[in-house]
Image 1: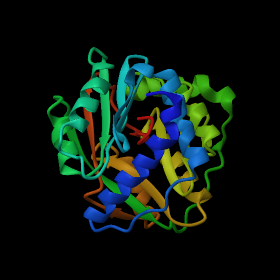
Image 2: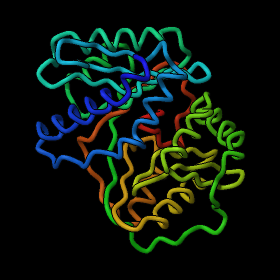
Image 3: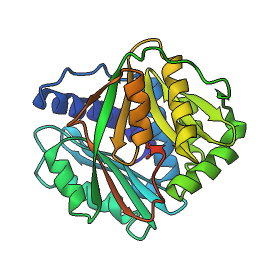
Length: 276
């Protein structure tokens, strides 16, 4: 994949996920702002050329895979194949190349959609499946914690320290990419951090559950409407506590977490769908 493929790959991603939502009987979500969404694609192509692949045919891009590797933790950021070509081998070949980029990595992470074919493919990689729920709703009666503040790029060394504790590998400049995409960094000094934007929690990591609870309350308190928290596994009971107290509804059938190798305790942690 090259930077010339960024916007075609973004269009393909929107088309593919809209098709999945229709097949699952769900409402098709509005497409993200291409100027913001393309930043992720661009930065992954630049930082992880060995994990960035596209397949082409006479109609243009037929598929795209994006994988990243940070401090020897590998993650699959994206795998899409044009509707009508799925189950024809394109996705398997893209996944093989993206996985080869991290085949010898110490830890591996994939956040899967509820597509059954995708889950079968990731299971064949030998990764462990962790069922997850999604929280969605308008938080009620949430008070902003006094000790949580806005973060800046100067907080990256602290976020790296938290990451290495919770997932044995730092995100590094991927957090700067999220800030460039218009998202907000929150810091609970000495306890953890969270990234949120557009009504959704993008990532949260903390040294202990109480700090994680405070950060999630801060995200909810900053919301002006519906919030979304995805990929809450059984290991994240602290997140369920806060969702219940804020009367945010839980939903099943929204995706699962695949983990392999050494990814630390992976708790208290809510991973990012794009940056894992």
